[in-house]
Length: 79
Image (cartoon, rainbow, N blue to C red):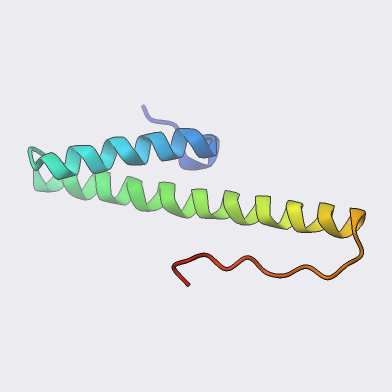
């Protein structure tokens, strides 16, 4: 049985997401299995986003503790 997304590391989640995408791109998956894989992928993405947000908060806190200058929010290229 696969681990719950919250029990995976960020890297493990990314690896599993890549595997899921590869399987779905091949098109050899039944509709039911594709839906299950898609649902698993969505859960992995949501969990990974949460881990990234936590990491950003830690970096912000650590930066504020070591440097009293103002922080600028990170804006990704997609925003």
